[in-house]
Length: 221
View 1 (cartoon, rainbow, N blue to C red):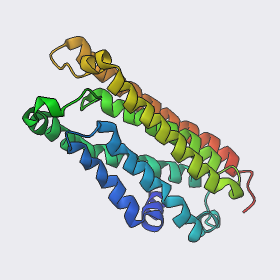
View 2 (cartoon, rainbow, N blue to C red):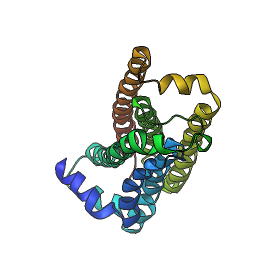
View 3 (cartoon, helix red, strand yellow):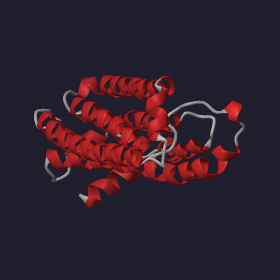
View 4 (tube, one colour):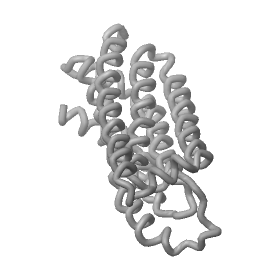
């Protein structure tokens, strides 16, 4: 599995993908809604498919002496690694924004939004889980539907991200509650959402592996 993951990073990672993994550092900008920063990793993943199709990656990997289910597993681990790296990049930038930059901003330039808290990253994990659960099973279902899987998964996940973002801009009480670090119930809620996000993220990965592997086993390469 380690070799498959290495193959994915070596052969399918474009410069756009690398840049997109690092762009969540833009969460540091105080005037941006925090969830905007995680649109970029999705856009980076969106560029992987055309590159892998050009390289005949599925055919090449299918010729290797490994099970088709392991091929799917390698792809899922690859996407999950990109997603987790993007979150790890965002964490220190988010801390700087929350503790240093935001307090320096004039009050009139700020507005209510999700901000930087444990719940933010739990919600991001749920968004990534949604993408993986749609993209992988569809990608490995029919070879002639791969581009459709790529586009539809990206569009639907982007819409979900926008829904979360707009909700927390509009719903001020929920936003203020989640950003109240002096309230023990708020902190516990944040941690609960983060843990729920982690559980959903990894369960989505397992679902994608199982469903994608089942679909891929029916494809004649």
